[in-house]
Image 1 (tube, rainbow, N blue to C red):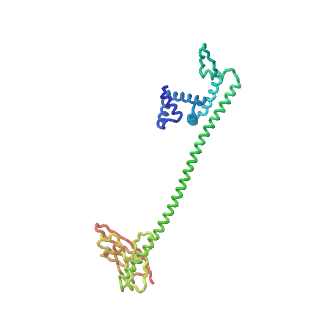
Image 2: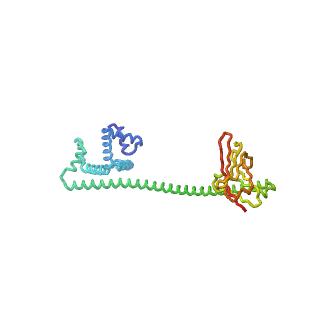
Image 3: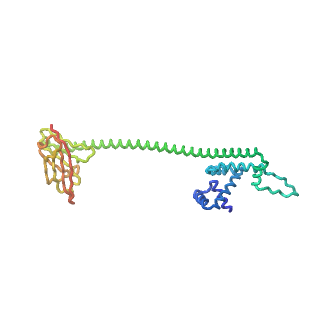
Length: 326
């Protein structure tokens, strides 16, 4: 194995490779059996260094994290610890003299095999089994504790984020309610201003009519499409002889003439006039019709204003109002 490959595999097992390189190396292990065997070889080397205490504290922690993600990580670690202990006990150190050659140490697998099988001692086998079980259990508990700690931290972070989002949603809901209340108050205020403006305009019309004011009543009609949905109301004293109905129109300068049809709520035609024209006013442009007050009884009325624009398009607008008699 090349030193560079060994270094890369070691960094991979210790979690020191960038995420892109880790993903690429993992894919290679799936398709390259020889490269996967090299990975297992470096893994065994790290297990041996871990068991013999030759890894630094930082590398031990990283390697424990790696083993914690393996299904058999705890078993591998326990086995490595037992083999390392067996090798230390069976390792014989022979003094070196000036006239004697250095003894050749037997391979590690022969030492471990001799330690396990030599002597036929049942107690040793039982001790080995107990140690393996204990070490596996300890390693499993360590890895599980680390995983539980990470899960607890993640759960705590998610709970904190959820509480923040809940608080933000509550603030947003409260803000929306306040805005809706403010909009409703603004609509009521505008409707009140509109009613006051209509009353002022009616007073101005009455003043403009001069001496006829005692026998003339005027009503500025509102188009049927409006937020309140209520009809206009005109109260007629017995002294009123003439009623002036004023209809504000949009784009009146584009209409050459109008036709007005007044009818009761039951559909009976009270008045029909043609050739009406829009006149300029403070509101823009108005179409006005006058009729004797005697023709208006206490009832509900519909006034339809029809016209044709210069481009030939027909338009129509309805106005509703109620007459009350004193």
